Length: 81
Image (cartoon, rainbow, N blue to C red; front, side, top):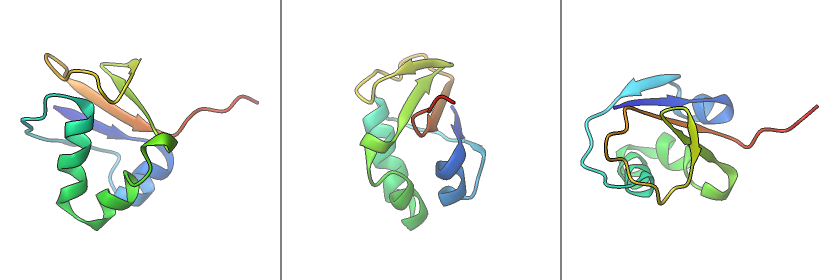
């Protein structure tokens, strides 16, 4: 599965994207796996209310299933301007 990181999420983790093997059933499970990797992931995912997630380029929720998903993107909420 491809995981994409945008804006300050990318800055904290230090990668724009990576490919991971996961047994996570939901986005929240995936986040827990990532948090456990190392401190930079824990810092990036410390406050999920400050993050949005898209599954295969569609906005989703953290309790969404990862079944059949090829791409997960994490990013801060967008602001208009």
